[in-house]
Amino acid sequence: MKQRMDFFATAPAIMKQVLKLNQAVEESGLEHSLLHLVKLRASQINGCSFCVDMHSREAMRDGESQQRVFLVSAWRESPLYSERERAAFAYTETVTLIAGQGVPQALYEATLKHFSEEELVKLTVAIGMINVWNRLCVSFHALHPAEEAMAA
Image 1 (spheres, rainbow, N blue to C red):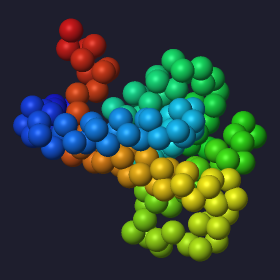
Image 2 (cartoon, rainbow, N blue to C red):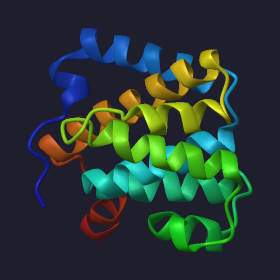
Image 3 (tube, one colour):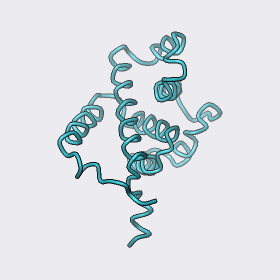
Image 4 (cartoon, one colour):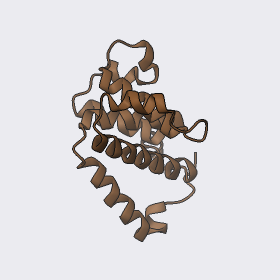
């Protein structure tokens, strides 16, 4: 797939702000392992191969097992995830697909059993952030690392 646009070069001022928010998410205090998994799950839902590839690699680089990375899309059927991770996955799916039903009260309350209110704000911003990246990469056909390798 041919890259449509280099959004960093085309709109550097706003992309600088996107990077600042991304850094704030990374430094929010939420576990990096959890952030990797949430980013991976949202990217799977959004069909962003660039981000699925990147976040799978980053998760494994930071110590996540291949098995846990491979099973994120089937997290409900896998015994490999903690209750906190399961709550994050359910919340990530709902927030990523928010137009369907919003965030039901029952899910909100269930998520608060595993996250403080402050952590839930941070998690929501993290989900919003990966959705921004997914929309940029999918809309403009971000050059996928596999395509870079094939072109070389």
